[in-house]
Image 1 (spheres, rainbow, N blue to C red):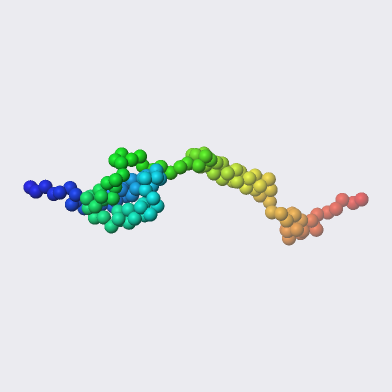
Image 2: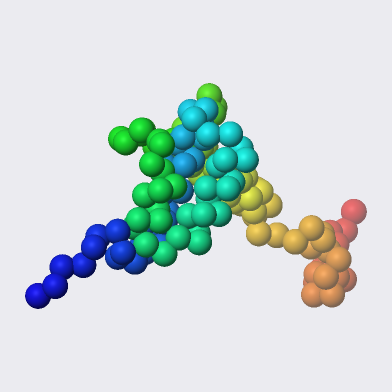
Length: 128
């Protein structure tokens, strides 16, 4: 059984993604300039082995806290979802109320239909 040099083992897409995450964290923390970051990301995509990936992050401290996106001071995602659902429910209630308030009737008056006109003409008027 032969053991292979770990540096010569081919890297996966996930390995490259992990290196890019470290580079992003280093850039956000001011450890890399924009030009350095862009150059190293390009090198990461071109890298095929673990040894090549290791060279890209060799001067970045190990255990670097990964960059997390900043949250806006506005609503949390759960609050935004709840607010959006409330708007949808309110809109449905308004449409339902409009339909019920109209009683399902058409806007034309009852006397304007042919059947209503015919019944009006055949009814007897009380004598005065």
